[in-house]
Image 1: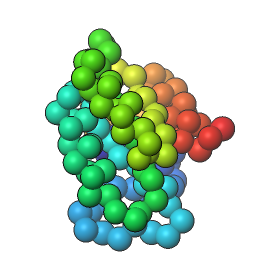
Image 2: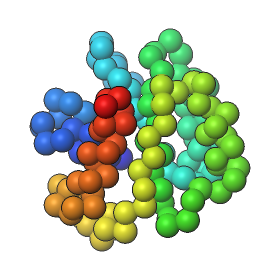
Image 3: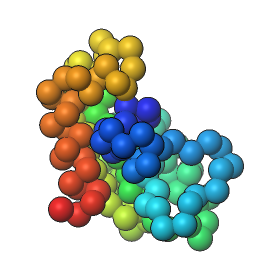
Image 4: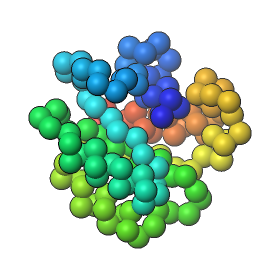
Length: 127
């Protein structure tokens, strides 16, 4: 999650994107983003979160591939069923380098992560 936040923040020191603590109020005018992996467990937790979402703006989903293979069929179907409750779905491809780094700052030193981050920002910003 910290890596996705850093990818969306684009080096602005937390002014563009940051992780909210549980129970923290969503700042006015922000676009909420939920992050989950492509496992069925992750998507099931997403469904539970959306069930309790309430009157907040529809969140974006950043769906992070946790393996080179695509998500299992049940996870794909569940995300498709939840799309009406989401502002959009941005897919983050499997990046092997993320398994070998100690933190978000180190991950962003790699070209593949920088490219994926730029694409992720463009998708969510609608450009």
